[in-house]
Image (cartoon, rainbow, N blue to C red; front, side, top):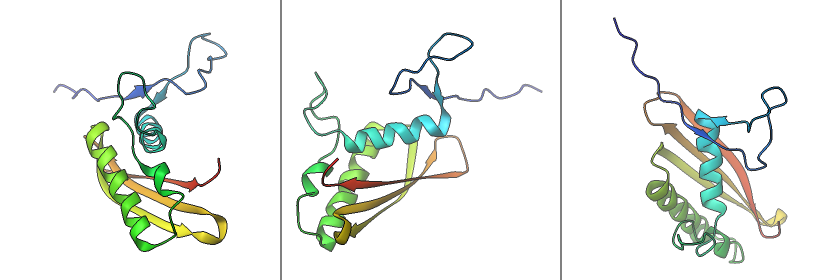
Length: 131
């Protein structure tokens, strides 16, 4: 009986770290690679990537709006759109955005399932007005 090929997703780390033994670039694989890609897509503004001006989201523009449920919904919609359009490895299950006006930030929780996998993966981070 043949063993099915298991797909391995891999990306390079942002800091381009070198493996101490192999002296080669380390890799970020599978769910960690998708998590990093999702977060990078969300935090990338339009026109930030050369030759790909529409890759990214408009999330950062909402950070200076009033903390309302409408702003939360707009951020959620922007996240859904960017993941659906630019991250084919992730099947999006849920996005939750909660305003934290006393801390000047939004809490973001994204739940997705990697294509061809059964376990859901959760990514949590904060969107701050000032980085």
